Length: 321
Ligand code: F6P
Image 1 (cartoon, rainbow, N blue to C red):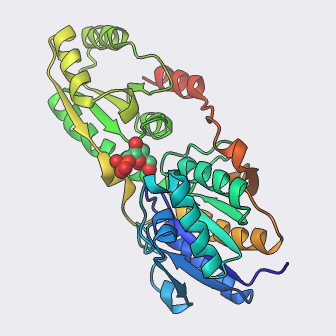
Image 2 (cartoon, rainbow, N blue to C red; image 1 turned 90 degrees about the vertical axis):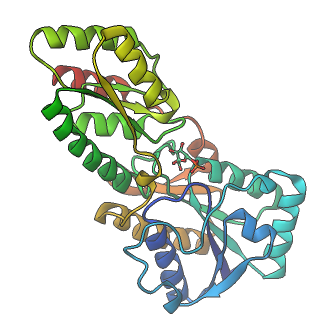
């Protein structure tokens, strides 16, 4: 059956590049002869009938804006039978033939479940600063978030070196150490603590003390939010080494800002590809970039825990310290 009307939604944590993805879905979809609707606040908008038809003009001027014009939410109601059935009713009421879900692994888990139950064609566009979609190298937003964090770390380095201090910098990543590993390496940081690896503060302190003996006086230790609180780790380091330590939490700053060219290009390509997939009758898949090309990964695979090349990062960080 040929599809006529599709709907796009952004769900979960926003990622810089969601707006260019929306722009791509809307303009390419319309150019392919489809009607495109925008759903507000993710699954919540389907449950509560907050959606409207979008035109070429609806997405003018958003290509360089962070966040999402459709807004986003973490919707617990969609986890319930009632929430899902109300979302299905909205889809039927508005004659929506397919969904483009722009989000991360939580959004894809929900989309997979929903497709299994209601068989509404659904294609995911990988967008999350955490870069934690299995089978996909780079998601929309990752490059922007990493560059934001790196810019902050470069600045912290200036004061750390000048005042010969230890800094513990907390970056985002409740379950994923990708941002931490990447910025620790690119920022020339001395240590990195991530949720995927056992933390050994004693070893970190041992290195700091030995470094001090040979004249290395400033350190930046990056910690992913899921591996511990920067302030607690800084206190522990001071307690164990007697050295002055400062902590910085970069937090939601990493989620905002103008998407980089990389984040925009991925978004524009994936948005178009999602429309093509729905037209071709494909469903229950996530799209992302892997090996330099667009890949289709079934939702079931995409939501599995992504293995990071932790040893590669950590060895290089140590070798270059
Ligand atoms: O979107 C991913 C993420 O930014 C994680 O890195 C972080 O742990 C989480 O979202 C924070 O979520 P919230 O903004 O809901 O507190």
